[in-house]
Length: 170
Length: 274
Image: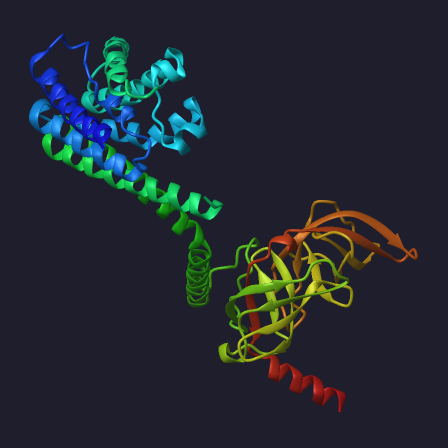
C-alpha cells in the first residue's frame, strides 16, 4: 500500500516536474527535454494497457494545458509509448516478470536493457512529437538534428528518473 | 489467457489507442494553426485518394452497363443513318453492313452466351418474341455474319453460329465477282472456305468477300473477310480460303436482321413448289 502511494505521489510530482521543465528550461530550438516517456515506462506492470493509455493521455494533456500551449501535442506523442509499453517490457525484461507483476530495475535487469527500453520509448515519443510539431514546415535536417539532440538529453535525464522510480524493486 | 481472449484484448487496446490518438489530433488541429492546415491537407489528400479509389472501382464495375448503353446508342444512330440514306438515296459504302433497300428491320442484341469449342456452335441472344424477333432472322455485325436465329423464346433467342459445320452463307468476291457458298473451315476462330467458284474466273488473294444478298436471311454487301489461297477441286472449281473479319472469340454485341419481305418470298416459293 505504501509502495502504491509512493508511486502515485512520485508520478504526480514527476508530471509537475515535466510541466516546470517545459515552462522554465528553454535550451534552444534543437533540444526538447521530456521525461514523460520515462514516467510512463516506470508505471507498475499490473496496470492494464487501456488504463495506461488513459493515464498517459491525462499526463500529456496536463503538460499541454499547463506548459506547451498546443493542446494535444504531448498527448498524441505519449500515447504510442503507452500502447507499446507492456509488449516492450515483455520483450526486453521477460514475460515472467510481467506475469508476476514485478517492475524492472537497473539493479535487477542491468543498465543495458533498461537503457534500451528508455531509448526506444524516447525515440518513439520524440519522432511523433517532432513530426507533429513541425507540421510539414520544418526541413528534414532540422528535424533530424532536433531528434538526435533531444534523444540524447532525454535519455540522459530519464536514467536517474527511472532509477528513482524503480529503486524499490530489488 | 486463451488465444481468443488475447486477440480480443489486442483489438480492444488498439481500438482505444486509435480513439485517443484521433482525439489528440483533433485537439491539436483545433489549437495549432500550422497543425490545422497540415492535418486538414492530410485529411483532404486522404479523402481524395479514397474517393478516387472508390470512383475507379465503381467505374470499373459499371463498364458493362456503360457498354450496353453505348451499344444501344450506336444502334439507334445506325438506324438514323440508314433512314437518312433511304430518304436521300446515297449509296452504301462497301465497308458497312447497312441496307438501304428497306427490306430488313434491324434489332440490337447482346450475346449472353457463345459456344466456341464445338463443331456445332451456338449463341444465346438477349432478345426474344417480346422484342419482335422471329426465327430464321440473320445475326450480323458490321464486320460479318454471325449466325441464324433457330429458336425464339419470350426474352431470349437461340442462334446457330456460323461456326457450325452445317451452316453456309451465300458470298461474293468483290463488288461484282463470282458467287459461292461459304462455310466455316472447322478449325480456326476466323477461318472459312468459299466453295464452288468457277475455274475460269481469276481470283486474287487479298480480295474482299461480301454477302451476296441472294439469301433472304442476310442483307447484301456485308464485308465478311479476305480471300487467301485457292485450291482446285475435281478439276472444275476452286475452294478459296477466307480469313474472316469477325473474331468469334470476342463477340459481345450483334445486330439481328429480319427480312420484312420474308413472308412474301416464302409464299412465292411455296406456290412454285405446288
